[in-house]
Image (cartoon, rainbow over all chains, first blue to last red):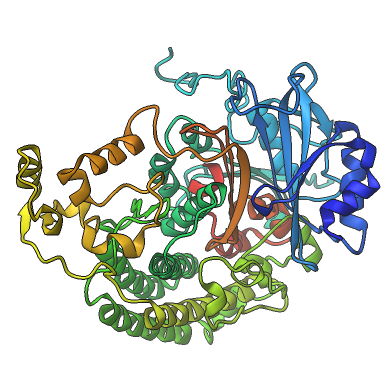
Length: 164
Length: 441
């Protein structure tokens, strides 16, 4: 059984969608069950996902290629890797524009700490239970979240120097 | 009288001569002992991910050059492989070999820079000079193929920019022999050097569990004894055909990281040699029978309809376009008209080629992968370098995310430093091999 099938079996009612585009097994889950899914993936011996390889987000505002549902705007994307079994899985958590908040995985993987700070910095997604949720790449005085699709790429707001 | 003890806050950076890049460490010291470290990054943030969303796929390559600027070719390869995965296309054997050769050359230059710089910071100036000399030999090879030393933009989606130059293999073997000599010199100067040994051994230790929890990969993880290497675990390109070992350490301290990097350079050199022996011959198209004529003359003849024998003629190109002629084209580019620019002879001499060219470079046209997402990891010099690209079916990527290998290592820096003395900051930070370009993006 592939990791995706095991997740499907365990969390059948909380999975919104699954796909394996180009061989990347992906499960889209409801935000509420993230911690349970993550614990299940990490602690089940047959899965053994001990690496949180990457954590990022995508903003689907004005997305031309179709979306799961119009009510969701952001997706937080987790890439997990298992050293023992050498397999990977992608978990996606869709979030609404009004309440972009999801549980922090800091307790499970130390790498989540900085990744979540970066997602907060760039997308304004909050992580419940994060010990130190502050900006990481941009400076504290920066207004807005730079990677959101409604933030113009040529907008400038430096601390010193020319403004627009 | 009671002596009051309090800790001192010391700012290291963002611009400090002993730091490899722009980064700020706020250190809490008690005497010489480090009590706490706060790492502040972002001083070199250039909005790589945001800018990639505004350009076409092939235009992202100059941005990827500037991620890890010590081994830019690996970034190029990683990005191209991800887009190719998204498109679902395969590339010719010869360009797979070329990509591996260039990646491994870059890995050696990266490790040489890292080790040379860390040795210099511990006072071994001559080692630094020797290693930079060796890097120079390899940069000459890179320059010969790509035309640039640093901002190479060499890889293209579906292939590479230009073929290897004639006689490249012989020159590469010579340079590899020279680099090997330098590695032996460096080994003799450092490995049995009391000062270097004492400064490195037992410093900056990280356990296997911690390294995994922090998501650390690459030489840093391997120094703890875990033999995880993307080239072995998920072989891409032609790595499964090469014979190489994954060197590992035992304790995960600075000295182990030095040994792992030294051993990896030897493995990379071996891989380059194997590739040069295995690489299939080019040019595949064989020799063209016509004359070599300038580009302007070819365009004029085509416009006037003097097309007799024009298909057999070869075009004389500006050096910047070298390698994109019909002669070398097929061996290094995928057979995908919707992805790869046509050979220059076609562009200049017939309307189909010209249309094809414009369909790929004009605004609103270009490479259009299907709607979807893909993540592809390659083994960068610092660890797993992964690109995650989301496409909405248009010519611009919807989202380009790069997983920079030194980001998780930097997040573990407080763990490595707390408890040791101030002087240990230099070797530990050196062995992290922080590259601000990929850390801050």
